[in-house]
Length: 265
Image 1: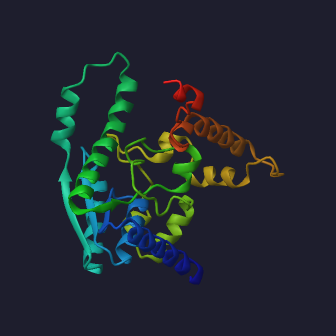
Image 2: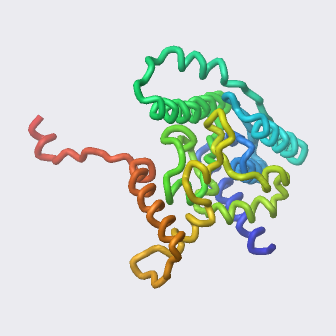
Image 3: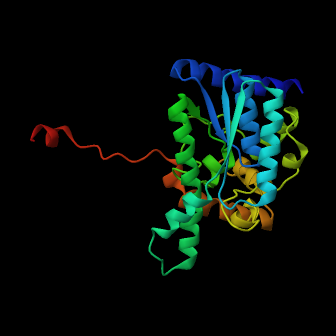
């Protein structure tokens, strides 16, 4: 218990130090009803700085909306520095879809629109960030942000700072238990909430977070770890996703122009 308490305090202090240097006034967090956003919003609230929670549904599964709102109400009662807005972005998303031409590839279109939902939410977060002088707190964990790139570039990946991005998913769950996050959220299967159905992250990725964590921790040139058949399959999947999504996880490439070319202008 002491170690997880120290971890929570460390992240809280990191947030406090960062916001002091940034000269911003608070945090804004998108709350989805999942474990990552619940933990992130709670830690932000524990800093004592104003924390604005946004539930931004876009044809969201009702159970996800319910869990998000339960968490926000729980947080507001627990911390007097918490405020919130419940927003439906359905009309905004519908209008966006109507302006676009139909795609010949329906599967690519569905994926593009799913990612567009995340980007509309990001735009909404930054609206509230701008009018309140708040930092947008990211909710990604280490598996998603630096392992397989399971997030939307300039969507849920568009943030000012990432409090839990160095934590594995299992560590986020341990932290959630320490923070007394509501059990409905702790017991739910993780989902990104970007689809009209109730597909989970595991359905989309093809492996569980525990499986991916294992290969992330044990894969490397100096590892003597022997993998089972299933672990080898997950390792191959991890390599594919990591390579495919490098463009999200690496800094944006910048074309460095030689001085002799600049000097010749």
